[in-house]
Every structure is written in structure tokens, then in C-alpha cells.
Image (cartoon, rainbow, N blue to C red; front, side):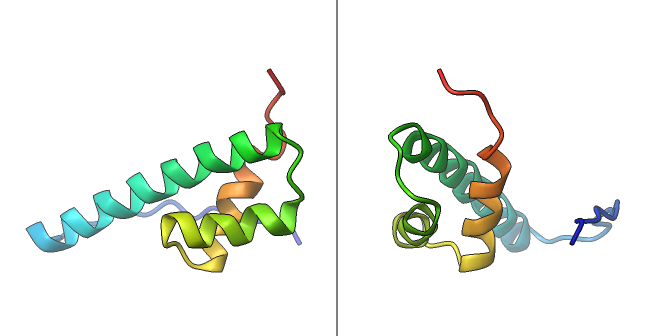
Length: 76
């Protein structure tokens, strides 16, 4: 099933919500970094996603998205 990105804008956000959103972006970026590192080490996909949930505190959907976002990146 292809994914569809819908452009959106947040028009009103308070300081607390802004901090939560920034924290989510930080967690997701960290999850992507961890996923890439584990992928380089040859860790299986299912194990990467479980580890991401434990290490970053993200739910399974975000963990899968983080892994998927680095799946096709080149190996170094």
C-alpha cells in the first residue's frame, strides 16, 4: 500500500504543545539514527523495531516508520 503525505500547517500551538512536538521530533531522529546503526550491524528488521520502542519510548508505528525511513540508505 503506497503512503500518501498530506501537507499541513499547525496554526495555533501553545508552549507545552510546542515542547512536546519538539521532543517527538528529537525522539524520532534518535530512532532513525539507532535504526541505521543496527541495520549496519545486520540486525533483523523485527528486532530493530522492538529495540527502537524500548530505547526511544516511541510506539510501534513510529518505530516502524523510523526503520522504514533508513531502509534504503546506502551502507558505509
